[in-house]
Image (cartoon, rainbow, N blue to C red; front, side, top):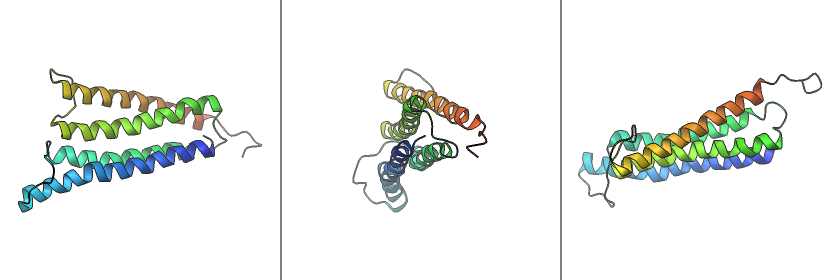
Length: 155
């Protein structure tokens, strides 16, 4: 990956962490304040603790994963431009897709684990599935890049 590609990946990774903190952290705090301390929630909340905790952590975990996968590709020579043109979008679809689906699930009051007759649930399943496919592509790209041995002049 080029330095500019890494910059874009890291920028998005940090934004994912922040989005998880804000978009899932506040609802989680409101849920705790409502259920534990009896305070009125400033927004109507669906979902349960497990869903909001997962969403809160998805921002951190996916942001760090995007940064890590982009970062390890800097260990060797920069990626070829063609490989980076598809690698970077797969990282972003993976990270943002997982974060979006994990926030939508508790917000819509669904789990998003398996398709069923509920449109909201099926939307979450679809977003998770797209993110999963992107993660396979991203991991494959990182592995393929790292699997190439160094040449003597690169070492």
